[in-house]
Length: 275
Image (cartoon, rainbow, N blue to C red):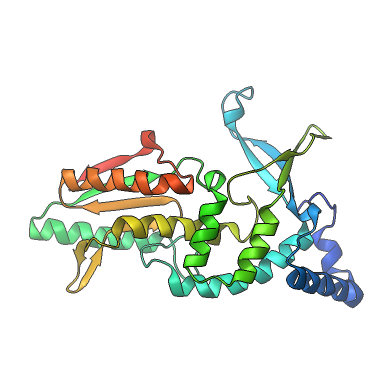
């Protein structure tokens, strides 16, 4: 775990864990084992301290700030344990089209694949329509009941699902600004910002949406025996079609299937290209 990071609401730093010696390590291990057996998460692990960071523009406009969430460092250790277990399962069930937050994959893989598709369609004189979509406030909008269902469908062990449910129950945030802390306020939607598990949880939801849209569609031919419907990097997606009507229909289907999960397409950022 990286040092030099701000502590969460429990004020325990990464340096304290790193240099605390064997006695502290044993205490942390005992605590984590207790969490695992009891399915109960300490209240302080459920409190996120939000620090607003100014980006650019008018400093009086709240939209020009990005919030950094500070979480319990000890809680992060426990989440790393869960991440290792969940990551192995996710790699067995994740859609091939998703490259975000996955080991050994990245945005360059999707760029390469899309370029290959474009070159092949140009060479064969065929049309290809690419619609780029993005979900609005994606990580903040996920509906928890839909998330638990998606995890269960993917075969995530019931124990891990229960631990995650307990983590999210009674979640609270507080804002730290100008040296002052606000009162805590409840958080009822979204995956926990700053948590190492959140990318995996979000990918599970997006995969569930896209499976409902594309599982009955063959897709665009890629090579001799492969077919591709879309290319994704986290919440950014490139939908592939060969005519405008099909592209429009797919866009509407994505919007409809995403809604029960709390996700909405950011329409002003959609872009379509006809090749």
